[in-house]
Amino acid sequence: MEVTGGFKIEEIEDTPALEEFYKSQGAFKEGFIRFQPGGCVLPRCFTRIHDSIQNFAVREDDIWISSFPKCGTTWTQEMVWNIVNNLDYETAKKVSLEDRVPFLELTGLLEERFFDVAEAESKISGTGLVNSVQQSAAISSPSRILKTHLPVELLPPHVLTKAKLIYVTRNPKDAVVSLFNHWRIMDKYEGTFDVFFDAFVADVAGYYCPFNSNVLGYWNIRDQDNVLFITYEEMKKDLQAVIRKVCKFLEKEYTDVQISELATHLDFKSMKNNPAVNKEDVLKAFEDMTRGSSSTAAKDGKFMRKGETGDWKNKLSEEQNRRIEEWVEKHTQGTDLRYTYTI
Ligand code: PPS
Figure 1 (tube, helix red, strand yellow):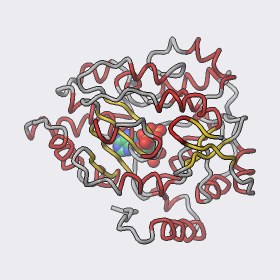
Figure 2 (cartoon, rainbow, N blue to C red):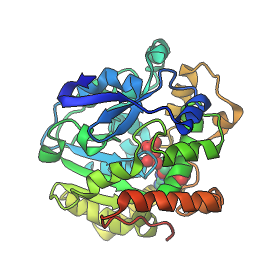
Figure 3 (tube, protein in one colour):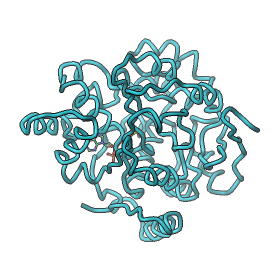
């Protein structure tokens, strides 16, 4: 089927990896589709908002933050918002990050059956559940900051010619472990890690796969003046250096003391304990929307889980480690993209 922007939506080939994954989750009863060109997997319900995303009005003073899920998006959002807003920690601690930096396509990740409850839950400030595109459009200029996980080809037209964009990535071994936790706490995933892993390396795990294409799309344009490419591992290793790099990109100047204070504000423990960024509000909204039917494990799960590099060593079997390395090799061959697995 052809849709706005000349894209085609196609059915995903029904493989055991997809079938097992599909059976293990409860958020997407309508299944998943693939957008061409690019091959991005998205829930079928995303097609509802594709048109409004392709018609989204991009502004020249916009700042976009893009990533594959679980690669340091929230961390980058909080860093960028504070850099742009003169280190206004008071507001940063008071107003939910969902309100300050909306997630453009969030509504497209929710099936319509959740909507009546979402309406009620929209009273929970800033979850953008009902209409995240409208919420994003309503943010005033200058310096509107928006979050997306869309691959380059599915971005609203003109993001890459008009706005500034920061892309953050993380090594896929840590990303898959974090994404597994995410699906358990957000998307009613009740299957095993092995099933989840198989779907991830088969490039069909629910939304935004294939991982490597998402990263490579941005890696290939990293030298554009309006694009900054950063990594989770760089932030873990030397957060202040990344803050300086982002300040330069956004043309903001701060003293050494201010940069050190921002690094403290962005520390994992500090963000984990900050209700404005730790997504307890979003988790609560999702839980209420699905009428409290999640498993105990899901209810006990936290968005701010471990915040480490190298946790994959505690989760991936030797065989999974070999398979994911082969998968990276296959899909990044001929490029100079290299992931960092330990720091
Ligand atoms: S999402 O849902 O796509 O927006 O998730 P995202 O924010 O990209 O990634 C969530 C992971 O980032 C970790 N995180 C942090 N790590 C270190 N320091 C800080 N301040 C920080 N904030 C968030 C978060 O814990 C998730 O990683 P895991 O490995 O699951 O802990």
